[in-house]
Length: 253
Image 1 (tube, helix red, strand yellow):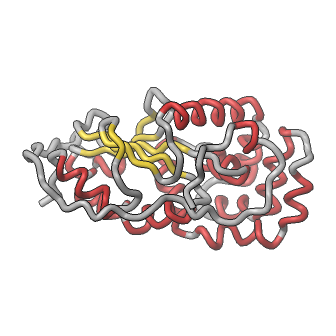
Image 2 (cartoon, rainbow, N blue to C red):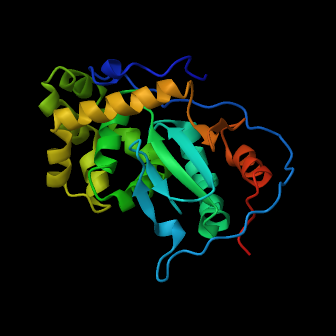
Image 3 (tube, rainbow, N blue to C red):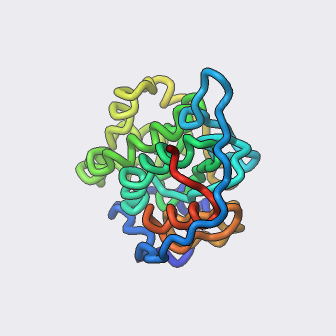
Protein backbone atom coordinates (compact mmCIF):
# COMPACT_ATOMS: atom_id res chain seq x y z
CA UNK A 1 0.00 0.00 0.00
CA UNK A 2 1.15 3.55 -0.68
CA UNK A 3 1.21 5.57 2.54
CA UNK A 4 -1.40 8.30 2.45
CA UNK A 5 1.05 10.85 3.78
CA UNK A 6 4.71 11.17 4.67
CA UNK A 7 5.07 10.97 8.47
CA UNK A 8 5.71 14.21 10.32
CA UNK A 9 9.35 14.41 11.34
CA UNK A 10 8.72 14.10 15.08
CA UNK A 11 7.19 10.68 14.49
CA UNK A 12 10.33 9.20 12.94
CA UNK A 13 12.53 10.65 15.67
CA UNK A 14 10.46 8.89 18.33
CA UNK A 15 10.77 5.32 19.58
CA UNK A 16 10.98 2.84 16.68
CA UNK A 17 8.00 0.67 15.89
CA UNK A 18 8.14 -2.94 14.80
CA UNK A 19 9.24 -2.88 11.18
CA UNK A 20 7.56 -4.35 8.17
CA UNK A 21 9.63 -3.38 5.16
CA UNK A 22 7.74 -0.63 3.44
CA UNK A 23 5.81 -1.92 0.46
CA UNK A 24 5.89 1.42 -1.23
CA UNK A 25 5.19 2.78 -4.64
CA UNK A 26 2.53 1.59 -7.04
CA UNK A 27 2.02 -0.05 -10.38
CA UNK A 28 4.61 0.53 -13.05
CA UNK A 29 3.45 2.79 -15.85
CA UNK A 30 2.86 1.16 -19.23
CA UNK A 31 3.17 4.51 -21.00
CA UNK A 32 4.76 3.88 -24.41
CA UNK A 33 7.90 5.73 -25.33
CA UNK A 34 7.32 8.71 -27.60
CA UNK A 35 10.82 10.15 -27.96
CA UNK A 36 11.11 13.91 -28.20
CA UNK A 37 13.79 15.88 -29.99
CA UNK A 38 17.17 14.47 -28.87
CA UNK A 39 19.43 16.53 -26.63
CA UNK A 40 23.12 16.49 -27.56
CA UNK A 41 25.41 14.69 -25.11
CA UNK A 42 27.58 16.85 -22.84
CA UNK A 43 31.13 15.70 -22.19
CA UNK A 44 32.43 15.53 -18.64
CA UNK A 45 35.55 17.57 -17.77
CA UNK A 46 38.74 15.81 -18.79
CA UNK A 47 39.71 13.03 -16.42
CA UNK A 48 36.24 12.79 -14.88
CA UNK A 49 33.05 10.84 -15.44
CA UNK A 50 29.49 12.02 -14.91
CA UNK A 51 28.62 8.66 -13.33
CA UNK A 52 31.15 9.36 -10.57
CA UNK A 53 30.30 13.04 -10.07
CA UNK A 54 28.23 13.82 -6.96
CA UNK A 55 27.31 17.30 -5.74
CA UNK A 56 24.99 18.58 -3.02
CA UNK A 57 22.03 20.59 -4.26
CA UNK A 58 20.78 23.80 -2.68
CA UNK A 59 18.00 21.71 -1.12
CA UNK A 60 20.43 19.27 0.47
CA UNK A 61 19.87 16.39 -1.95
CA UNK A 62 22.76 14.48 -3.49
CA UNK A 63 23.01 14.87 -7.26
CA UNK A 64 24.66 12.13 -9.30
CA UNK A 65 25.78 13.31 -12.74
CA UNK A 66 26.20 16.64 -14.46
CA UNK A 67 24.93 19.25 -11.96
CA UNK A 68 23.93 21.41 -14.94
CA UNK A 69 22.20 18.60 -16.84
CA UNK A 70 19.19 19.83 -18.83
CA UNK A 71 17.11 16.92 -17.52
CA UNK A 72 17.04 16.83 -13.74
CA UNK A 73 15.49 13.73 -12.20
CA UNK A 74 14.65 13.83 -8.50
CA UNK A 75 13.97 10.64 -6.58
CA UNK A 76 12.24 10.75 -3.21
CA UNK A 77 13.16 7.44 -1.58
CA UNK A 78 13.18 5.55 1.71
CA UNK A 79 16.00 3.18 2.58
CA UNK A 80 13.56 0.65 4.05
CA UNK A 81 11.28 0.69 1.01
CA UNK A 82 11.17 -2.47 -1.09
CA UNK A 83 10.08 -0.61 -4.23
CA UNK A 84 13.01 1.79 -3.79
CA UNK A 85 15.33 -1.20 -3.54
CA UNK A 86 13.83 -2.60 -6.74
CA UNK A 87 14.55 0.63 -8.60
CA UNK A 88 18.09 0.79 -7.22
CA UNK A 89 18.90 -2.73 -8.40
CA UNK A 90 16.96 -2.78 -11.67
CA UNK A 91 16.76 0.85 -12.79
CA UNK A 92 19.85 2.58 -11.47
CA UNK A 93 22.40 0.60 -13.55
CA UNK A 94 20.84 1.42 -16.95
CA UNK A 95 20.09 4.97 -15.79
CA UNK A 96 23.77 5.52 -15.02
CA UNK A 97 25.15 3.63 -18.01
CA UNK A 98 22.83 4.93 -20.70
CA UNK A 99 21.73 8.38 -19.57
CA UNK A 100 23.70 9.91 -16.70
CA UNK A 101 26.92 9.07 -18.56
CA UNK A 102 25.86 11.39 -21.40
CA UNK A 103 25.70 14.47 -19.17
CA UNK A 104 22.11 15.07 -20.26
CA UNK A 105 20.48 13.51 -17.17
CA UNK A 106 21.24 13.82 -13.47
CA UNK A 107 19.47 12.21 -10.52
CA UNK A 108 19.07 13.91 -7.16
CA UNK A 109 18.39 11.62 -4.22
CA UNK A 110 16.18 13.03 -1.46
CA UNK A 111 15.48 11.08 1.69
CA UNK A 112 11.99 10.17 2.84
CA UNK A 113 11.67 9.03 6.45
CA UNK A 114 8.97 6.41 6.90
CA UNK A 115 10.36 5.16 10.23
CA UNK A 116 13.24 5.59 12.67
CA UNK A 117 15.44 3.14 10.77
CA UNK A 118 15.33 5.40 7.74
CA UNK A 119 16.75 8.16 9.94
CA UNK A 120 19.57 5.95 11.21
CA UNK A 121 20.48 4.65 7.76
CA UNK A 122 20.36 8.10 6.12
CA UNK A 123 22.55 9.55 8.87
CA UNK A 124 25.16 6.85 8.35
CA UNK A 125 25.02 7.15 4.56
CA UNK A 126 25.57 10.90 4.78
CA UNK A 127 28.26 10.58 7.45
CA UNK A 128 31.01 10.14 4.86
CA UNK A 129 31.93 12.32 1.89
CA UNK A 130 29.11 13.31 -0.52
CA UNK A 131 30.56 11.27 -3.37
CA UNK A 132 29.85 8.09 -1.38
CA UNK A 133 26.14 8.75 -0.78
CA UNK A 134 24.73 7.13 -3.91
CA UNK A 135 27.08 4.15 -3.68
CA UNK A 136 26.25 3.49 -0.02
CA UNK A 137 22.53 3.92 -0.67
CA UNK A 138 22.73 1.37 -3.46
CA UNK A 139 24.60 -1.00 -1.14
CA UNK A 140 21.77 -0.75 1.41
CA UNK A 141 19.05 -1.27 -1.19
CA UNK A 142 20.95 -4.08 -2.88
CA UNK A 143 21.25 -5.93 0.44
CA UNK A 144 18.03 -4.80 2.09
CA UNK A 145 17.02 -8.13 3.61
CA UNK A 146 20.49 -8.54 5.13
CA UNK A 147 20.54 -4.96 6.40
CA UNK A 148 17.19 -5.32 8.13
CA UNK A 149 17.69 -8.83 9.50
CA UNK A 150 19.12 -7.46 12.74
CA UNK A 151 16.04 -5.33 13.23
CA UNK A 152 13.80 -8.37 12.98
CA UNK A 153 16.00 -10.38 15.36
CA UNK A 154 16.39 -7.69 18.02
CA UNK A 155 13.04 -5.95 17.91
CA UNK A 156 12.42 -5.86 21.66
CA UNK A 157 15.83 -4.40 22.51
CA UNK A 158 15.55 -1.87 19.68
CA UNK A 159 12.14 -0.79 20.93
CA UNK A 160 13.64 -0.22 24.38
CA UNK A 161 16.47 1.80 22.84
CA UNK A 162 13.86 4.25 21.62
CA UNK A 163 13.50 5.48 25.19
CA UNK A 164 17.13 6.59 25.41
CA UNK A 165 18.10 10.27 25.05
CA UNK A 166 18.35 11.18 21.41
CA UNK A 167 22.15 11.53 21.65
CA UNK A 168 22.32 7.82 22.54
CA UNK A 169 19.24 6.47 20.81
CA UNK A 170 20.40 6.20 17.20
CA UNK A 171 23.83 4.86 18.14
CA UNK A 172 22.24 2.09 20.17
CA UNK A 173 19.75 1.22 17.42
CA UNK A 174 22.61 0.99 14.90
CA UNK A 175 24.54 -1.30 17.27
CA UNK A 176 21.59 -3.61 17.90
CA UNK A 177 20.51 -3.75 14.25
CA UNK A 178 24.02 -4.58 13.01
CA UNK A 179 24.21 -1.42 10.92
CA UNK A 180 27.64 -0.52 12.31
CA UNK A 181 29.17 -3.74 11.00
CA UNK A 182 27.47 -3.42 7.61
CA UNK A 183 28.80 0.09 7.05
CA UNK A 184 32.23 -0.66 8.51
CA UNK A 185 32.66 -3.29 5.80
CA UNK A 186 31.97 -0.52 3.27
CA UNK A 187 34.39 2.09 4.53
CA UNK A 188 32.58 3.92 7.35
CA UNK A 189 34.22 3.06 10.66
CA UNK A 190 32.11 2.42 13.74
CA UNK A 191 33.72 5.39 15.49
CA UNK A 192 32.83 7.73 12.61
CA UNK A 193 29.28 6.40 12.56
CA UNK A 194 28.86 6.87 16.30
CA UNK A 195 29.93 10.50 16.06
CA UNK A 196 27.37 11.21 13.35
CA UNK A 197 24.60 9.25 15.06
CA UNK A 198 25.07 11.14 18.33
CA UNK A 199 24.77 14.58 16.69
CA UNK A 200 21.13 15.20 17.60
CA UNK A 201 21.00 18.74 16.21
CA UNK A 202 22.29 17.67 12.80
CA UNK A 203 19.89 14.74 12.62
CA UNK A 204 16.87 16.80 13.63
CA UNK A 205 17.78 19.46 11.07
CA UNK A 206 18.20 16.88 8.30
CA UNK A 207 14.86 15.24 9.03
CA UNK A 208 12.98 18.52 9.40
CA UNK A 209 14.34 20.05 6.18
CA UNK A 210 13.91 16.95 4.00
CA UNK A 211 10.45 16.28 5.43
CA UNK A 212 9.49 19.85 4.48
CA UNK A 213 10.66 19.27 0.90
CA UNK A 214 8.61 16.08 0.63
CA UNK A 215 5.56 17.89 1.95
CA UNK A 216 6.09 20.77 -0.47
CA UNK A 217 6.29 18.36 -3.43
CA UNK A 218 3.24 16.44 -2.15
CA UNK A 219 5.10 13.16 -1.94
CA UNK A 220 2.71 10.45 -0.77
CA UNK A 221 4.71 7.29 -1.52
CA UNK A 222 8.17 6.04 -2.33
CA UNK A 223 9.82 6.10 -4.69
CA UNK A 224 8.42 9.28 -6.22
CA UNK A 225 10.15 10.75 -9.28
CA UNK A 226 10.07 14.31 -10.55
CA UNK A 227 11.56 15.23 -13.93
CA UNK A 228 12.27 18.95 -14.27
CA UNK A 229 9.65 19.52 -11.61
CA UNK A 230 6.95 17.31 -13.17
CA UNK A 231 5.84 14.09 -11.52
CA UNK A 232 6.67 10.86 -13.39
CA UNK A 233 3.67 8.56 -13.69
CA UNK A 234 5.22 5.41 -12.24
CA UNK A 235 7.71 4.13 -9.70
CA UNK A 236 10.07 1.90 -11.68
CA UNK A 237 12.47 2.04 -14.61
CA UNK A 238 9.77 1.11 -17.10
CA UNK A 239 8.11 4.43 -16.33
CA UNK A 240 11.20 6.57 -15.81
CA UNK A 241 12.99 5.69 -19.06
CA UNK A 242 10.08 6.68 -21.35
CA UNK A 243 9.75 9.96 -19.46
CA UNK A 244 13.46 10.68 -20.04
CA UNK A 245 13.19 9.82 -23.72
CA UNK A 246 10.06 11.90 -24.14
CA UNK A 247 12.07 14.81 -22.76
CA UNK A 248 14.91 14.28 -25.26
CA UNK A 249 17.33 11.89 -23.53
CA UNK A 250 18.94 9.18 -25.62
CA UNK A 251 21.00 6.15 -24.57
CA UNK A 252 24.77 6.52 -24.78
CA UNK A 253 26.19 5.18 -28.02
